Every structure is written in C-alpha cells, then in structure tokens.
Length: 263
Image 1: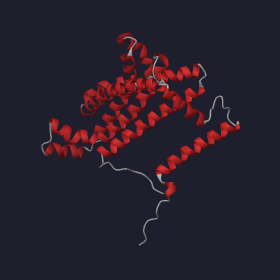
Image 2 (image 1 turned 180 degrees about the horizontal axis):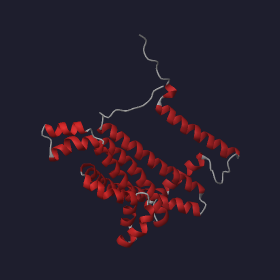
Image 3 (image 1 turned 60 degrees about the vertical axis):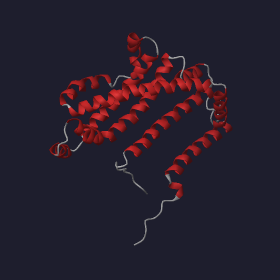
C-alpha cells in the first residue's frame, strides 16, 4: 500500500501566504514605477517603507500607535469581561435570554461610532467616552458567541454530568465553561478585530492622537505616503490580533478538531 503523496513545498500555507504578499508588492512597485499607476496617489512600496522608517525615527508614528493600542486594549477588556459573563448568563437562563434578546436586536445593528455623542454626554469628551464607544459592538459579539456556545452543548452530556453530581459551580466550571470555550474564543477574536476598527473610526472623528487621527490628517493634508504607512500599520495590527488569538486558542484548546481540506 503506497504512502500518501506529499504536498509540494510551494503549496505550504506559509509559502502561499508569503508568496501572495511578495507578488502583490512587486506588482505595485512595478505599476507605480512605470507610471501605470499614478505615483502621487499610489506611491511605490519602497518609498512607503522609507517613510515608515522616517516616521518611526522622528517619533510621529510611535505616539499615535501607543494611543491606539491603549484604546484597543481597554475597549477589548471592557467588552470581553462583561460580554462573556452576560453570554453565559443568557445561555444558562432562559429568562435572561428572553429579556435581553430584544435589546441585542435593537442596539447591535447601530454603528458603534454613533454612540460617541451619547457617551460624551455621560462621561465627557475624554478617553472614557472613546473607550466605551469602541467596546459596544465587541461586547455584543462576545456575548452572542458565548451564549451560542452554551446553547450548543449536547443535552445528553449535561444530563449525565448532573446525574453524576455536577451541580452549581462544579457544573459551570467543569462542563459549561469548557464546552463553550471554542465559541468564546471565536467571539473574542471577532470582538478584538471590531474593537480596532471602531477605535480607528472614533479617532478619525473625535481624537487628536491615534492612528485614526493620523490617517485623517494625512488625507486632509495630502501626505499620501503618511496615509499609506498608517493604513499598513493598522492592517498589521489586525493581522497580529487575528493570528495571535488563534495561536492562543490552539494552545488552550488542543482538543478542538481542526477541519480543513488538503489537496
């Protein structure tokens, strides 16, 4: 019986991901350099890279980056902790789910940035209002995924756990929480991504410091290379957030099956 054919090295996920990026950057460099793209609006990646290093050296980028990271971290914390708690409560108690479902359906579709004026009325025009506004959508995402994680648990497993004496906190920590963890991590992953999105949007309309503010100022003053540097940094933060939480999920939940198709 022959062994399964080996996947060619160029089909390795890392090679495919890196190759697609290199190809895109190369095409962009060529198109801008030859005039196929207007360099005033689509500067060459090499010039954007040089501008990135210049902005790091003079501290322009560092200050804005620190402000954004601080807001994202606080917004994610404000969203994740109550989001998991409320989601677990809604998954366990039907009364809580029926009471909060209409609120979720009403508030979730509203773009989070629109809550900034309301938050400013209560908390003033400061960091607290920006953080709270940035946490709204992430809270609903974490809570909804956590609730779904609890509700999808096999009822036979729950009945067996109760039959063998798992009640109260023991049932919660030994059965409900571990069973819902894959869904909780999905909610956290989505919540962190949306926290970054909303923080940038809030900074564009209501902050003097942050990547969103820098992006808006660069566009207004036609500093195109600064604008591209800011966009790339925001994209890189999203990449790190997504793959960082996925790495953490794989380490904490090694039993969760990974479904994929290999060719």
